[in-house]
Amino acid sequence: MAACFTLLGYFAWHAFKGPRGFDHHEQLLARAAKLDETLAGVVANRSKLEARVSLMRPESVDPDMLDELARKTLDSAKPGEMVVMKRD
Image (tube, rainbow, N blue to C red; front, side, top):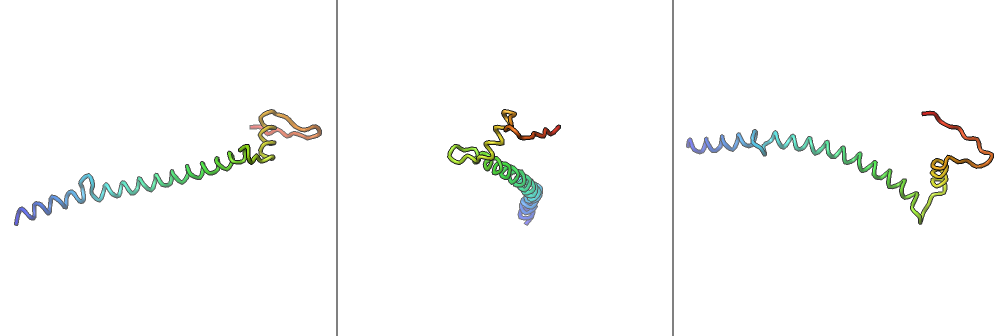
């Protein structure tokens, strides 16, 4: 009888305080939730970047995006246009 209580106590202690117990499980769930939030942010950022890159693919170049990047890179304007520079 004492052996049964000893085994029961042993397994109960490990269920609550052991390396795979309830406390450790809760910590893993909290870490998983935090990693899910981080993943959601990374996926959103990646989709924004993919959308911007898709506008510059050779088979589907967006003329407005191309014009904007060319003007920004070359610091040029069409004759007769007024350029307003923004200070940083």
